[in-house]
Image (cartoon, rainbow, N blue to C red; front, side):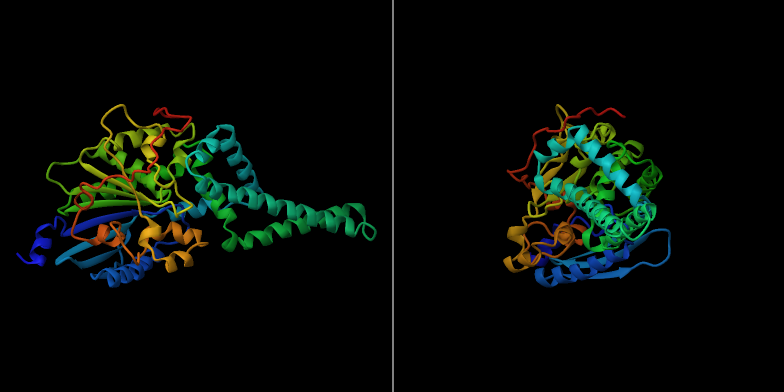
Length: 410
């Protein structure tokens, strides 16, 4: 038997449907397609396989198709982008005053519930990322107040009292507007709205997402009723905990049919504890518990300590206190091992590019190990087959640190 025949024999996926759930991102999905195209081509050159991506036009969804030739096997994959960037943009559309009121609310929630201090016992990186907009926006406010007072008292001898205060207030507001225009470089407003999206509801699912997530359920259920070999759901960043709820609802509403497509769930750079550690996140903890027991779903969770925006190697089920007394199967938690799978030169170039590192899971590795996003999403093996027998990272965190562990609703 030739090497090509052997690899073809191990192929269990000839066609696949991938559903990608992005994190909190106001950008349109086009950039994700271009990222897949460019990074996929780079990984193909490095790893010695071929990928051919074609965009799709028309229809009610956004996506692209991929044809691959890997290890002597051909595979066709349809990728569908589960869009919620419009909801993100609406949630970010706040006045400056509204943003600072939101800031006070979020700080009160995380400090008042004790969640902040428990999260720090998991990983300091994502907590620092969460505190960054707090300090940056507070600093902006202090600078604006200081400059406003300078203007007020600097002109005190030349203009009437009331006019001086109005001038100082106006200048302070102008400074805040100027800072907001710089947010494409500072990311303070963006990160605040990101963490506040669920936190403002104390961990309960934002009501504006309910209809959209049910639509996601129906899209995936339709794919599971087709003759595809595998349905793979990918959740990145905050898209990971959305994926948990979507899949849990899917399995309750549409039980898997024996002999149907394999169902896989890949979570990347997850920040589940930022939500699951809050008091009203009972439904999310229930969904984590439910999904962790499913025998016919393969759930793989990939993070990396080099990504400061994720709870690296923290088992999202276990640390949230959603670990059942018995029957826990998932997730399989392991590291993308940036320090081993990226060359020192590439890793050095990414050192201070925190957002780029958070997206590295979707990109090419110049020294790939067992994690390859493009083999997983477009290769000839299902998620279950690819990681069969894979042991979890020994340094994963499984201690339940959430102060709220009930799986009941709010």
